[in-house]
Length: 318
Ligand code: HEM
Ligand SMILES: *[C@@H]1O[C@H](CO)[C@@H](O)[C@H](O)[C@H]1NC(C)=O
Ligand SMILES: *[C@@H]1O[C@H](CO)[C@@H](O)[C@H](O)[C@H]1NC(C)=O
Ligand SMILES: *[C@@H]1O[C@H](CO)[C@@H](O)[C@H](O)[C@H]1NC(C)=O
Image (cartoon, rainbow, N blue to C red; front, side, top):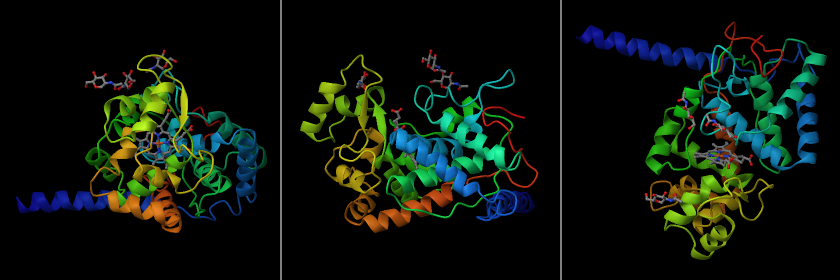
């Protein structure tokens, strides 16, 4: 009995150590010899894409999040469906919602021209997410590199891992804990909703069924998003500056003027209220914790060493 228990404990510690070891292998200078201009190429690609459409920065940041939450940051979300698997792009959270694939494909093509077969799509996405936040006025952080790309993707895993806007605070906390992310990470990373847009079909339950929403704001949103129809109508997640990365998301939460049920759960009389209150008044604290949270999220279960592959085309297994 005791030995069964210690064996189990050993296996758990070993498993945790292995995944930690993979994350510990990520290094900011991983491509300093093999692709010297990588960081400049990604930054140029993001700058061009965001000059054309500022929202793309939000879409790229979300793409990285939806990649990392499904079996780690391995670019699995970028794979199109094949005869061998149904991929993640048509999973519940992504279908008609995830966007920015072309931007990553274009950057990958530029990187391939200069450093063929060297840089993973997972690393490009992690850099692109950071550059997007910086471009929109948010904090910067160092991106560890050396991730490799998956050779498969799973719609089922995406359905089961990516949080939904219907989630309660306790479900959100559990969902983040499953990824090794804390309550603080949950609140800080949700601050990503200071940029970007959401569809009527996804915020409808909050504006019609919830009572923890400012009455005049709910009325305004109901005039835009009817009970049925206009499913794809877009509204800003931060009603004031949806293309500027600031802390207004938290001020909106305190005023109960946000779009999603899951967002308002973070400020609804529970354990996370104090963090929301802090970030609403302390932009610097938010920026610091957001950057720390992004570093943690981007280190979820990377493939390193000889695992996976360096895809030549982000949409396809080699
Ligand atoms: C905490 C749980 C979360 C839930 C339930 C959630 C849910 C959603 C939903 C429903 C949308 C609207 C999608 C659409 O209408 O097509 C959205 C958009 C977005 N989410 Fe989240 N999200 C969460 C956390 C995060 C995190 C951790 C990040 C990044 C660090 C993030 C980044 C974004 C961004 C930037 C957008 C706007 C995308 C765009 O305009 O294209 N979200 N999220
Ligand atoms: C994805 O959206 C399309 C409509 O654009 C729909 O026809 C299809 O059934 C959806 N797929 C899934 C798996 O929900
Ligand atoms: C995932 O969710 C989609 C959309 O809700 C659903 O159509 C599909 O059956 C689910 N797929 C799997 C493999 O669970
Ligand atoms: C509101 O809740 C009711 C009862 O649970 C449900 O039938 C209805 O579809 C919900 N409406 C929206 C817009 O989510």
